[in-house]
Image (tube, rainbow, N blue to C red; front, side):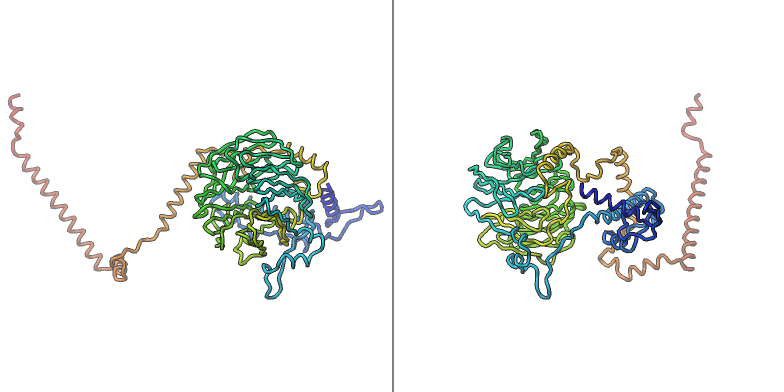
Length: 568
């Protein structure tokens, strides 16, 4: 509500101060001559931008773009390009207008001279920050019940820890104040929060359990035999996706308890799974090196990619849903562009990476053994080196998770849990209607009701969510267009195809020169051509005359059939 009020006041102030507008002062209308420095909000109503507005727009510019005037023949393509460019310009303007609601900027760690950021230790970083930030970096020793897996709520206020040997703890992340903890005395394979901190799911020895924030068992789901290896919660659909050694992907509606879908992948056991935050498509890694994309609407994978030569060990998808990082047991870490389904970069790791996570601002954290490396710009461009490095002597990292809206990385390992400072990893500005770190109890209850009313159905999970509000065209018409486009492409390839240079002396310089000379028509060649044509015509005339003469000679003698006519 405060953000909406600020936006409305700024909009009305800039609308009143635009060039040529009139403002009431002391009961009289006074015409304003000045132009406000932040009047970009009033550009849509006919105003003009100042130098400050143009500078702000330049930060969100995507380049010059395509020119529809250059397209003359294809009218449909010209219309699509023009519409796309108009949407891009509108997006740039709206992004610049929304900058007034983003008061905080993200910062990064910078080194001077010959220094390198990856050489900075956590002790050096803690000594250079304030005491409030120092309290966010700590190490919790739980050596008897590990290794541990960690999960954070969407607002980043609660931390859920699950030890392999049955220990479960719910704590306030900032300062690590344990609220509740239980011992289930069973093997714990994976944990995750559901809608908020009031419920969480635990994959135990055989069954899947759901507990409340105090550790009280709410549900026991027995139809996930033999057990569940990995889980992912879809926040906007209220669905919990699970996968296990049987290779079956299941979707459960948490709000009603119904089984939405159950699909066998037919690719063996699944040990790593990640949800795409943009379109809610599930990414599953398999033992044969493939990564398959699944939706609850189809019983076959919508996309299947061969990513590694060995077992896929870890997956991570950025918040925008454009990039995917995959790590395999073959010792490679690859970054993929999901929009084109092709690899962008590949790295060789000293040991296989078994845990990864991507922050809200695009930092990639990868753990191999006791070493955790964070890459600052490793998605769109190739990273030259790590941004930060943290080592845990005598421990084995088991899970990684960036804290929402904080520059902190949570690491679950074999001897407990620790959080380290990663400057610039968290999103500094938050949307209070999505995830509010300062949410009260009343706001939480109201937000839960609103989320239930706005719950998205499973049919909205597609590769391209932008096509949901569009009209599906006739399939036969689309098929004819695809066939025509393929035929045009084949014709273009054949037209541009060059003649092959054959071997065995046929394409030597002398042969090629002789072929060129054979196409030149000189006087002697023309005379010889006319002579051959005249001889051909004379031969044809002589054959015709001989044939006519033979027919005339035969016509003078009686035929063998005349005797039958004589008797008649």
